[in-house]
Image 1 (cartoon, each protein chain N blue to C red):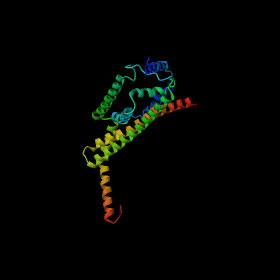
Image 2 (cartoon, rainbow over the protein chains, first blue to last red):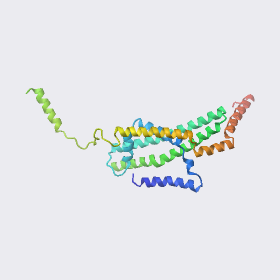
Image 3 (spheres, rainbow over the protein chains, first blue to last red):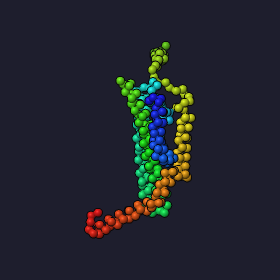
Length: 156
Length: 103
């Protein structure tokens, strides 16, 4: 991973934000804290079950070009990002289906204020999918690819 | 000198002669950096605070999309329509069965 990763990551996110601005929509519409927590927190908590916080930091460090990481360390970092990606997708699927179940439950009960609950879960579901896509595209896929490239360079 | 004592001295010399090289550099015990207990504690504390803050914030401050969806839901009576859709579906199935259908 080159140091220019930050620049390209910011440009990628910026491109999406530019799309929102061009469409004359509100950027704030993409912000929802519970969605971020429901996508990110389960993935981090499950990663903590078998990775120490130090290994979180090391995994990011290993992907950088200028370090003398061994093949073993690179493979461990690769497993870290592969697991993180799967966990983010799994937590998003769980969040979306939890939302659908809650919406059906509220509608089924015929509650007078079901509109509020339906709106809350619909917003959480839609934004959770957006966050999962962004996290996968900007973090896990590039770092996995960089680590695999470094491993190939070591073997080659 | 007794033989066992002589042997233990010999083995001690042999073990002392071994020099380790090319291994992984181990952090000094109690050293700082990303591996210290303070970092682990801070990492967990920040994570717990972020999760709690995010969920509490979401509980008391509705997001913009949520407000928009709520407007649409209330404006078009989506929740009642969905309930009506299910009521109609159940009625259709009951009618079909009463007419000898297999649905």
